[in-house]
Length: 169
Image 1 (cartoon, helix red, strand yellow):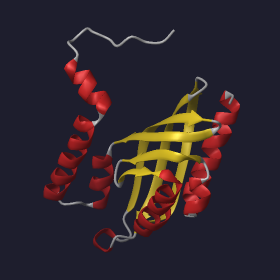
Image 2 (spheres, one colour):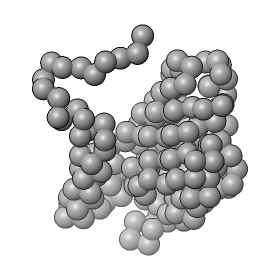
Image 3 (cartoon, helix red, strand yellow):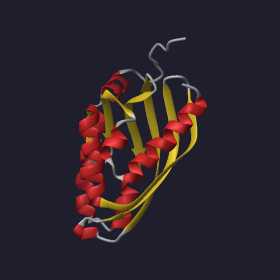
Image 4 (cartoon, helix red, strand yellow):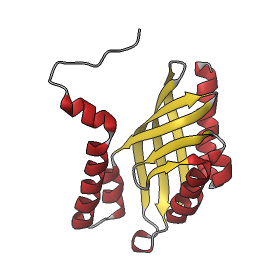
């Protein structure tokens, strides 16, 4: 895959997400892909990814928009900055409009997404929704747990300052 093909994949990926069609969205992923969503957690495989997008995310959000900018691609790993927005359909926050920015990491295999991770300041989204600070704290603690449990984080914290893992050349 070239950098131009990666940019086209991002356009198709985000348009599929905006559509709310879970099966269409899931076709951008390998059969065994994992999508790590900052709200709904990890989802593995096309069926679970389709369910997350269609039955969870689009249940809670209307008027969804998502655009990727400044894609960078090295042959099997890609990154892009994004802006997304939605109107909440959750009864407690119904009608509240949210806009957030984030960074996305794509691990690709055979032209499809094998792993998706995102880094988004969910506190900004919750603030726009008007989420109660106690509830926000509970969510932040869950996110902290996810971060600290990741194998990459465990490895990072186990290494002494100044050390680096061997990198392939």
